[in-house]
Image 1 (cartoon, rainbow, N blue to C red):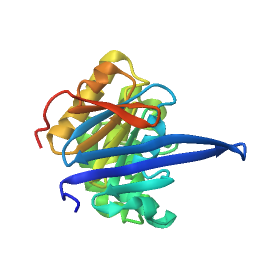
Image 2 (tube, rainbow, N blue to C red):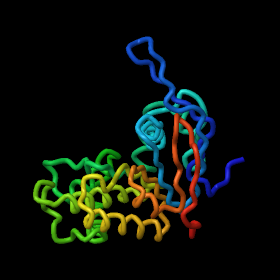
Image 3 (cartoon, helix red, strand yellow):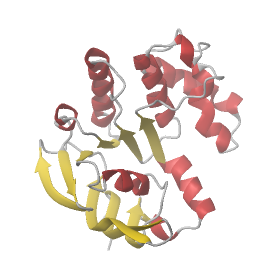
Amino acid sequence: MLDPNDIIKIEGIQKKYILGGEIEVLALRGADVTIKKGEYVAIMGPSGSGKSTMLNILGCLDRPTAGAYFLGGDDVATMPDDELSEVRGKRIGFIFQSYNLIAQLTVIENIQVPLFYQGKDLSETYDRCVELANLVGLNERLEHRPNQLSGGQQQRVAIARSLVNDPLMILADEPTGNLDSATGLEVLDMIDRLNADGKTIVLVTHDDYVAERAHRVLHMKDGRIDREVINKPSQN
């Protein structure tokens, strides 16, 4: 029976790729992961360890070849593509290294993007988006476009966008990778505050300093969780 506090539960996940029509690559080899509501978990591993594949599966960007993935109690591993897309839009907030903002849109419009794809009335959710812009300190830049913002400000927009649907978890992929150390620290402080407010955070990183801020660090090797390090107990 699933624990209702388990936001993520992965059991025996495997992912197989066929390259060139004949070469079989097993990127995940039976990984098991449980992440509870309000946890802050970092995933680390060298190139080829499977962490990018794990990221894609956790984010419902790909589906496993075998095994189960329960997100908020639902086995998303077996969902058809249209349902999986809906889960991705409603239950997961994404923060990417490259920000992934739309250049032609303003700050407030970029925050609204997930709502647009869900067919929601943007006029009815405008105030919510303004509140999120205020939360990340961009209340005076609502009509600016990405090319008028610094890297740190663009990442703040991405953080606000990740929160707009009140997701079950926030999945951050190298969120400070394109930032200088001082700006990266500001972004990490913001992620810490989101977790302190109860948000479940899963962060993929190669940086030991970034990973040390998480409650737990999962080290991947050869497609499996090789070891787990507890940095500090979860407060949630």
